[in-house]
Length: 460
Image 1 (cartoon, rainbow, N blue to C red):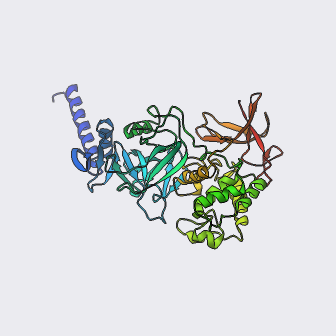
Image 2: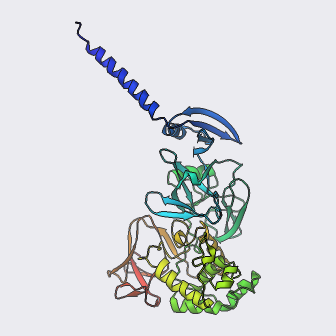
Image 3: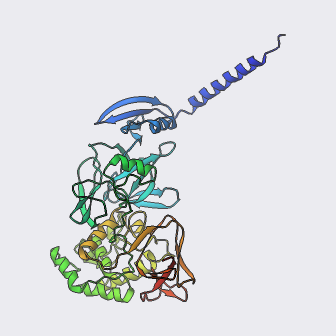
């Protein structure tokens, strides 16, 4: 018997491995995935794969910005760059998401903001990563529709008009339905007669391509502005004060031709609540205008409910009924703001400012991704010259808030979260700020009376 040579054994083994790889690929085929160049509505098939991850790798290495992956039914599963359409359900239905890098859940209603910025897909195309209203989040692909970016899609954008920043929000990716709000003072570096793109409201681009590239890399190297923009009306803590008088509130409503509003002649009610509970009356009034159609919605008129309390998207008629406007404001200031949205120990707390879907009250208060901007827009019109603007930044490390220098820790802002405060004084290595909550004996006291309470952070 002839002895089998070692080279023959190696050859047989290599053949077996190749057969195994072939069979492995064959048995793990998950469908047909076409790499398609999508230009001006015309489809050009570039290649075909039977594993999504292979198609995804080819997409990633291509320089064709119009490239996408389609399945056998013609559904787009992944993009090189483009928009995610969230306007896919009735107004009574919200769409859930998971915040990128966490297990935290959120929700959005696409009727109020149709488009999000596409950022990527998971390994099998069942989840889509996108950005809207500041949040990077994963959506189920069955809940959204993907569109390569072209002049045939309609996304949201920002413009400068005079000294104001305007946001035009797309209500439909497939046509030009939109609404526009003046949301605050213009950021440094932005000019009139230019369309700017942003899906966080902090970094602005005059090129969609550069926006997409930067956001996919989680950078802002090509942004027009060199410093992050934080709209002071959108990031004002509720623990601040307005300098408006009761007549200023009426003058605002008169200008809006809303003299038959429930809010008319209620300025003193809002100001009295500010004095008693330490919650900014102008912000509460702006929120009431936003939630109650300036005090003229049917729900507000029948329930004295100015803030949409319990008026859920799925059942608006479940709204809470109040005996009076004053009762409603008291419950809102104390039970909703002090004990909830301005209470760092409460699950609803993400900062007491209006915010967006990544930070502030908007995270959990409303399904509208731009609820915070809309409330800020009204606040901006109501009080266009706020005296004491907030200081806002992203924390580069955990920042503890103390009851006094070297005292007890009241609460902590985590690294990479936004912190917005009213600074009172800086001295001796400490910064005195307006506390988010009443303080008693070195601890949070949510049942206490807020008396212009101060807190402290290290550094000045």
